[in-house]
Length: 172
Image (cartoon, rainbow, N blue to C red; front, side, top):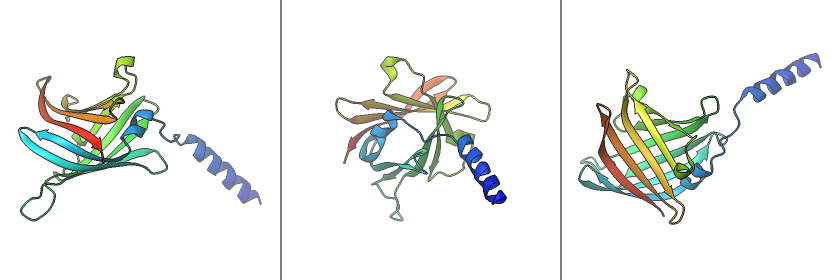
C-alpha cells in the first residue's frame, strides 16, 4: 500500500509539471482539410493540406502534399509540420520536416503570440540560421470573413525579406 501511495504522488507531480494542452482559437481555424494554391517563385502549384490536433492536443500537425509529381510519380513537395506552444517563452514553435531533409536549427521556427489587436489573426514564424540570424519567414494570415488563410514565405537576405512563395488555403 505504501508503494501505491508513493507511485500516486510521483504520478501527480509529473502530471502537474506537464504543460497543459494548447488552447489556440487561431490554430483551431487551421485544423481541417484545405487546398493550397499559389506560386513558388513564378511556378503555379496546388497542394493538399490537412491539419489536426495530435498528442493530446499539444501540437497541431499538418501535412502538405503537392499534387504535382516528379519523374518517379512521387509528390514534388511533401512536408509534415508540428506547431506547439511554449508557455515559458510565450511563443509558438514549429518543427518543419520536408522532402529536402537535413533537419537543422533552420528547421525550427518561432512565432510570438503577444501581437497587437490588428495582428490577432497572424502567425509569423521566423527561422534562424546557425548564427541566430533570421533566414526565412513563414507567415500565416487568417481571414475570418472568408474563412481562408494566406501563407507568405520569404527568404531573408542581409535582413531583407525576399518573396519565395505565396499561397491561399481554402477549405475542401
